[in-house]
Length: 244
Image (tube, rainbow, N blue to C red; front, side, top):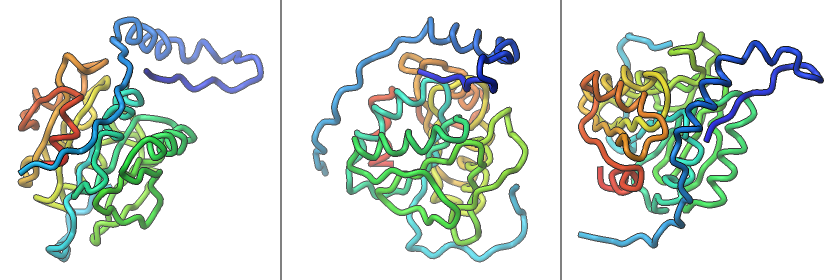
């Protein structure tokens, strides 16, 4: 459901320094409602942000969805990503709050279980339809004027690096109305400001509902900020992404 990074030292003499974080996450885990993720059903076919002027992206540039997720995210993504169809017409970038070293393993596991391609993002990556990029732990993910990935070591935002607000604000500036935002389970408010920027730019936004969220903090913050167009259960997000 979540993780705690082991403190340095052979016998973890610094354990007391993470006491507050550990207690918060254990308390959250105690109230969680874990579920076994069902296998994806067969796809059914039916009917540091710059403010300078830039050249608009070509009309052929794909739409891009940025997903913000934190506590409860690994399990939620294990249900969501394998449910995406291989012919997904949008590109996806996931910002999961994790430290360095965790996101590569998460991407590898999701890729093995999914019809879309999943990998950890690197500098210069170009988001493609049917591809899911995961922001590397401890790096912010932004986009240059061509829509390509730029990884940075800027200060933490909302206490996080990577932070979804950083990625979403960049997507809103570069991709404009081609940008979409999804805010999923997690503590805090990361994603609220970014989703609002995407909505104001003409993009669509979605939040995971309370019933299927392990922690309803991030979705609720985005809803309260007026940043969200629609709310749905975890099991319905893949369909929303397909038809959004």
